[in-house]
Image 1: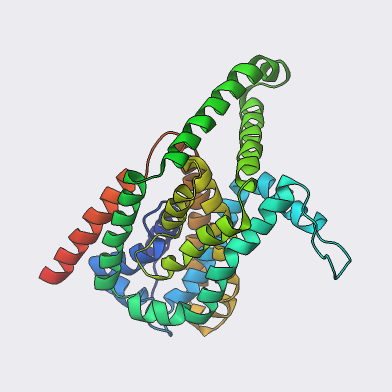
Image 2: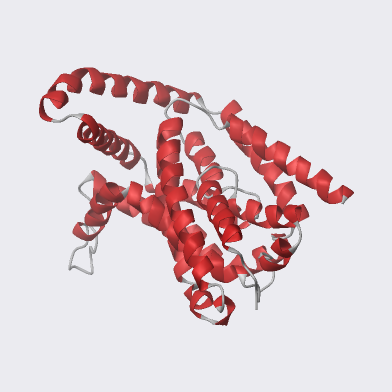
Length: 332
């Protein structure tokens, strides 16, 4: 029977909840950190073995992380899911009719999720077993850092100009709506109204893109099957290279990640209810709660961070941590 402590559960939950949203690869950290610590951490958290009890914990972590992200975007998901269902028509010759931004964005998310969904079903196990070893995860973490750095350095002019448009729109909204908002709401309510207005403007910008654009951006998520490559990081880079402003690229990446992460957990729910979880279910609950809270706080922080800041600090971190891990593992 595996021996997971509650301290390990808290650490695992924090790692998952933070690194799943920050563009530094949760899978890469989940592979590297136990091996760097050593002792029972390596035995308990080897994701490359099909019989590893850690796979049961991963299920709870994924579901909790998806819930944490959904809580932050819940108003957006209400609109998006509503848009999906209102776009359906009882006519097999024309089953879908898209008339609104919410309907368009809903189907863009569906289209963008198909490539990684199929790839995950077909190759997740093989990729996890082959690439889920520390040395390879460290190498891909360095590669992830290079992708993020190059994504910022060679970001197209269209994306940079879009950043300026978004910043100007935000300033105009504050100047034009500030006094009127203050007359009807104060404190947290005013903040929520401003956030809702920004979210609607962002979704209008995203829905102005094409389904082809959504497919290209969504396909970038396939790279995250490699331990060390960040799903949100490569999706953001793909979005920026398709002309999205940085904050919209981040928003679209987080929206795309939600169904993928949730599906990854739900499809493996048997590991959580089966013998792999025997004796560690209380620890799984603790790890999951920590992961969900950390994911919510992370996405809340990052949505503000990417309004004015870049991927470069995360690129530097990935290169330094990846190279440091390679050196340490080689010398050990």
